[in-house]
Length: 59
Image 1 (cartoon, rainbow, N blue to C red):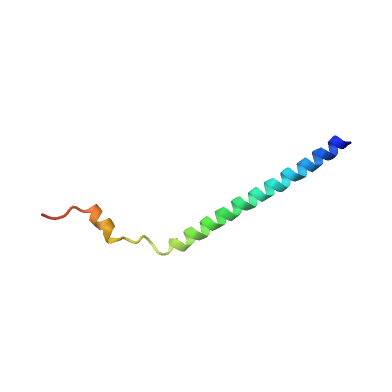
Image 2 (image 1 turned 135 degrees about the vertical axis):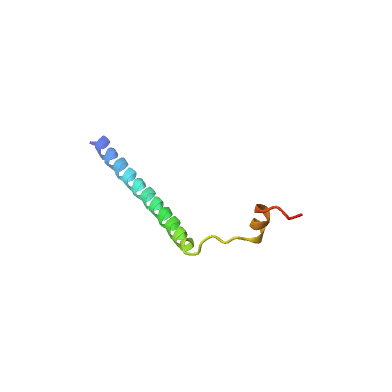
């Protein structure tokens, strides 16, 4: 009987741990999606430094 009770305690602990990991994963995905949605409407910003590196100087 003791082994069965220990098994149930271990099972409950594993379920709690899996739920916690699932919540962390969902929070990370939500944070990433929110961050990507914030930048989606703005577009890419080109800096002068990027232009200098992209084109050669005229002689």
